[in-house]
Length: 566
Image 1 (cartoon, one colour):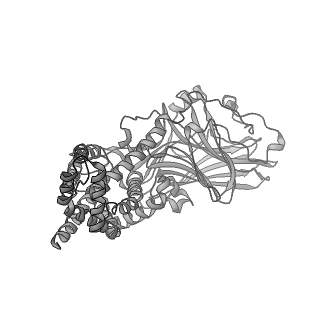
Image 2 (cartoon, one colour; image 1 turned 180 degrees about the vertical axis):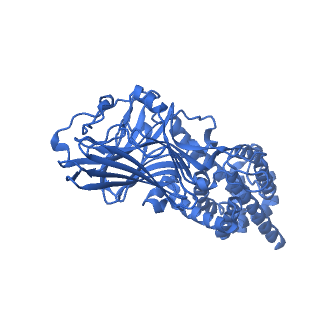
Image 3 (cartoon, one colour; image 1 turned 90 degrees about the vertical axis):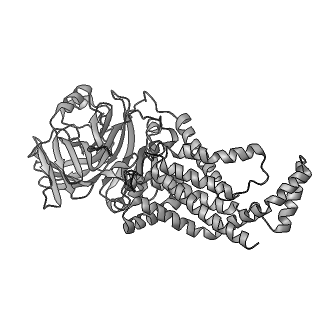
């Protein structure tokens, strides 16, 4: 077959792949409604006095102090949570971030991404990645662990202002929070934000103005619950296929993904240097990236909450000792923002793995690299997709040329095949033998087009993931009626255009050896695919329509050329 067979096989492979993913989501392990929460040993924190309300803060032997102990597991008691919700937060704004920081623990309880509207028709409502709304908890916490006085994420801090804003002429903004103990320990937690950047420096400066040594560890953790997800959109909803869970990275084991529902049954625990942890969703993520020189212990845990289980991913440093009159700094980076593929590799090694291309990464990364460079030249993601499709067709031109030549030769043989049908009637065996002899005599290989199809299938699926996963294409406009390539075509023009190309391709494609039922099924394929494409993101359908149009033109040219040669 010609291009029609290519489209059919690609479509069937894609549908089979989607059905497999859908099956895994629908019938795979479901989240536990009431997970069993184990309470690991941890260093007791004093103060605050309300740590008795925090599960997991058990007494630990003094000998355990130098080790990297688990951080507190972070749930706030119901009364404390209600009070915290009403507490005044500190607002911090830059050109790309609008943060709310709770003075209790200096916890980032809200992070609004100022350049990313939720919907184009409501441009003033921006994506809120971190939040502390009922049923939608997602916060970034950090603190210190010690047998002596030390502030954790439940400890009130003091700050000099209620609002901080990056000045027009400045590139850096520092937001300090301060805590002082009765024993002379001073801890300053400083957030450092930069113009145009989503990575935030977080430094805990410990000054020991007391009379005895102070020893303690640093921890940073992300905590969230998982809201109910609307699955009504089925396989045409990209949110269903993008990874949603926890990620850990270190240079030895590379990137490890953990689904939220797997945390309770199989907690993660690993000690390594140059690592980081993240909570990832479609297009966006938050990550704690400790100082690369520090050896950190990374772990996961679940704790009960009013709106279902809460999932925690944390990093804990080894203990340090600060002599009287001395000081030390615990440095880390908090990233809260989009998966910008040109930016995140510079924030931390391996951070690009948060972009979920799955098993097709080896193809998807080069395709995105090429697509982004084309976009740099043309300035429009839609035209970049069109030009990328042209380049892919050019790369496979020789392979598809052989396919279309085979199709054109079979088209020339169609009158003789019809004569064979009349001669042998319903004797299928003799009919098949006669057709094989005819193919052999005329040097036509009916399977000659299979190789180009097999080669293009992984490229197509890899490009499918590039278009679904790239936040750069989110809400990107094309031309005229298409103002968002990441959602369906509002007027279904691209699906209709693709159907026209498929119908035209059918006119050039001989349906040799097919019975009437098979021919009717093939004739219905343009309609079936157009209905399916009507709900796909416009960027994907743009690729399909462009590919179908180029294939039609190529097949038409080769068919006319062979026909003219007699």
